Length: 149
Image 1 (cartoon, rainbow, N blue to C red):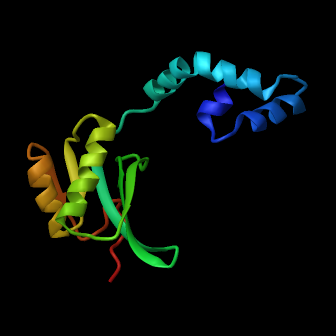
Image 2 (image 1 turned 120 degrees about the vertical axis):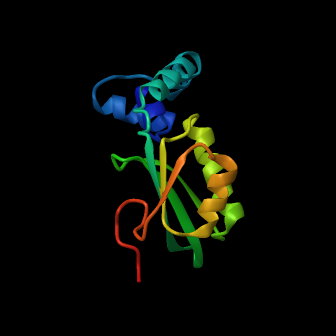
């Protein structure tokens, strides 16, 4: 059951992994175990995830996905762990608010410091969604990598 909730594996793939280790169990039994014990186990996994730090740098990258250019926005904590990401077609205030709202909903708390580049749309989103949070702007991307010239 741990394999099913921790990794993107199907019941049949887990059956094959166990069979390779000498454990004979059907995929139907695995499905029933996951239905019975899975919700409690998944809740425990979520609770054990490390909490995000109090400093959240944000950055975005312009990437080509399926032949179309998109903005990949991401938030990391001060340790470099990715907190959340969002792929969007625009880089305006509405897109920034959407990303920050998604981030706040997922993290269920606000940071002490929000670090962004000097994109004005982040300032608008910050004022509307995180007024109490300190907002720092820098010439570098949110992760400390130099901005492209």
